[in-house]
Length: 384
Image (cartoon, rainbow, N blue to C red; front, side):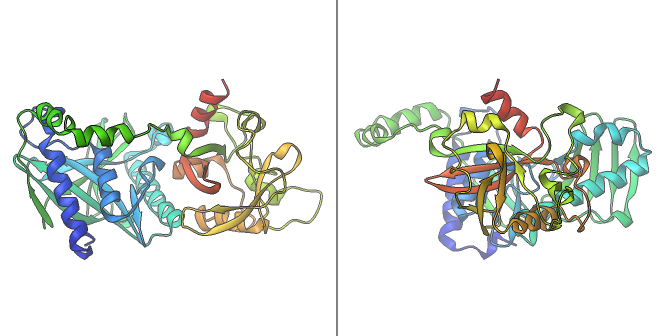
């Protein structure tokens, strides 16, 4: 497993920080078991092991390092066997309810597998594992287990009561909450890789007051400058679909955008595509992108770099040079479409991603995928 392969000083830092965070549990909870907020657990893991933090991308991995993607979990240990959420399929909920129980389970498994495989393709990872920090009275425990694809050929339903469906593939146990369209997987605490004793401080407020009231601490605090995320890292969200239709009527145009290769008028490469840039983005963020036809580098989530530029009238298109490089990455490498196969909005719904986010930090452009609804929220915030 991953944790056993890491350098000792990194493991000791991780252990020490978990112990420290756990000792402050009474800031948040009166439970006798240590408290650990899941976002803090994600950030600490990435800081300790120099991993890339993917937790805001709403994909199957919260972090990546080298060729490994990680699902990061923290939960109360209980009896040592817990059902924990691993995926949501809100956009597919209506379609799922029209299926029989066996058909529902088949579709849930297909969607889950598609999202794991899409995560692998986006970030260039081969291995996927769960890294879990469980908590019980007086300690935390670290365990790891593979993030397996669901074996669709071996699916068996053990219980279905109209509210949930419990099923297994012979290797893992799952439960699907029908009303919330949420998939849970059973995690069993065994083969503990790291055991961390935690002594919870009775009055963490007094401890923090003592620490931060020292002259040295006050001096360090005075040096800090609060910088908003928008100031530190500019970003814009771009839809992978047409914005002419809203809500459930969204579509990917059959002859433009990511299906530009299918447009008429002249012979086109099957990889000819562009990502549409709505006009209001240039108005609200006039200095974000370079001027039209100015080449800039764009780093993909797998660290590969493409030459990109803003093209067409009004700067309405994000393209690459050669143009086929963008089509190869989006249509073939990530979406796994065959040459000549149209991209549909249903395909984007299946993977739970329908936009990209382009960030700029000190002139360096990077791109990543964004969950369904991200562009809508972005437009509502900045173009309302």
